[in-house]
Structure formats: C-alpha cells, structure tokens
Image (tube, rainbow, N blue to C red; front, side, top):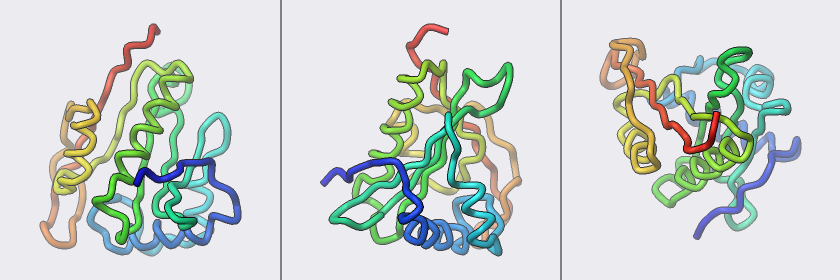
Length: 167
C-alpha cells in the first residue's frame, strides 16, 4: 500500500525523531553525528519555507520522512535537494520510493531545473538502486569520505537528475 505523504506537523516530531535517531545511530547510511540531540535534529530536519518537510504515514503511523529545498542559495538555487529516512520496519515496502517521487514532483512543480543528492553512501545499495530507478545517476564519488561501521571508509556518491522543465 502506498503511504499517505503530507507536510510534517510539530505533533509528528516524536515519531520523526525516532526514525532519525534510529538511522543515525545505525551509522550506515547518513553522515550525521550519531550523538546528535533531538533539538539539533529538529533544527536541521524541519525545513522552513520555501523548503518542505513531509512524513509518510501508513495505518496512522509515521513510517518515513523527507526534507527538500534548494541545494544551495543564490546562483545555485535552481538545483533542488532532498533527504529521506524510512523506519526500519517499513523498509522494502515502497515508502522510500513514494517519498522520492513526492520530492521530485515537488521540485518540478516549483520550477527547479534538477535535483542533486550530495552524499549517498556508496554501500547503501537499496538507496542507490532506488534513486537510479527514479532517474538519478551517480555523477561522482568522493572516495573514502564516510566512515562505515562495517566496511570502513567508503565513498559518498553525488547523484543527480536533470528535469525537463525550462530554466
């Protein structure tokens, strides 16, 4: 079943924080400090307009979250970016795909020329595969830039998709 994706509310924060905490403490997919506090995470994850943070909800439960906005300000503001996190119990059920499609649609509707993911851990095969299925490609890899708890130092991919919208 495809999750409902909607803008996050403050009342969603405890469930969102639980997902973020789970992902960063696992240490395998996001270059965030595993000791990050809930307050720091809140300031970082809860986008302010014109950006957007959303949740994916299934059976009344928050099972994923995403944030999206401009990749850089000023002359780079025509390129969007997004980040996604899915609860461990919901992985492999289309939540990440639904969040990715939502983010791409959101960016295209707002006239962004493209979307760039700045730091996709190369050993995160599920994410790399999902993004490639959705039209992204690896345009470069920063070698040995992520200290993976199992594989040691691995690369971070920069992944990119150009949109068909006019500049």
